[in-house]
Image 1 (spheres, rainbow, N blue to C red):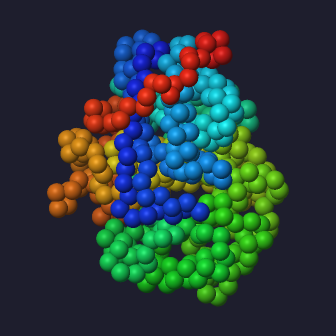
Image 2 (cartoon, rainbow, N blue to C red):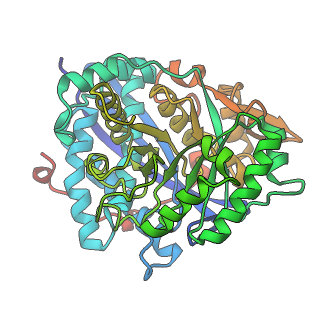
Image 3 (cartoon, rainbow, N blue to C red):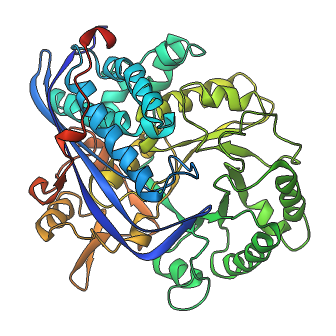
Length: 470
């Protein structure tokens, strides 16, 4: 079937600094504030008329790029410049399907990254936001919600970036999507988060009926094991029936990972191991593809930071990895195609099941968390990491009128306590019906654009010639 061609008329980008109420440590990085990026596209959808689409993501320091010679501010500025570059690429693109625009933007964005010393994961941040905003515009023009649009494949998703998947596998996966009616919160236990006291883990469990947990480990094997033993005791007492994952954020090597797996099978952590789903990204992203995974006695390992290319998951799977993360900041089409791979590989009789997980990048209330949760739900995932509400109070410095607009649009997602509007985590889950059924990509309200700091046009390179986008 023909897919609606989209012409991008204008792209607006801005940001807002989000202060954290507690430090967030992942791997060697400690974050106390980070900017949130916003994108707005004005588009013309062939056969349907004009439409506006929007998206938002956090620009987390030293997650997309951990190069030792770059400061945290340098890594954020790379994301900012990459977003400005992507805005110009999309604004100068020839009319195409939503997925076609994404495919056409890939080469010039990677060329820019190579020229500027920005690695593919960071260079891909800008296109990830633009793709979400374009899809939002397309769905709104057609009057479709996210699941209906995905099922009909209105974005024109095909195998140009995934030659290992047939057209039938992609189309069949989309047509059979069964969205999750709610996404349970998988609570992040950061390396600096307290385990005791009024803001400790037991208190968090009681306040939000938590049953799913993502636990950060830092690479110091003895310290990690000791902390896991403490956490396991708290979970056993406060959240019977819990499920957990571990996130190493690239801080392990093969020998220490094998030692960790052995410790997890020991008597002090055996009960915890029985409730552990997987270990996320143990090795440095540059070393992930250097060798097969060591023997880990059935402990599944997935990639996250190493997922920097369309073929990253198949290459990792060939080395023994069992899964990959869905993360909006890495690209919604990559997440969809990886989910299709999981379905196809498992249907083909894989010796051990493959999986796709739902991970967060401190998504904030409003567009960020709504669109990421909608994608997670559309893929049928029952739980996802959610930590933005844990590190930022409510809507942070967003104007009250903006917070109120999102609250009014999705009263099932948000709550008001003591005059502060924020995500309602009291049930331990986020209902998804209002996110999935409204026209557009989970957007029934919008940011206060006048309150954002524009990303300066001076940061945008010269226009990319149309010939490089074809």
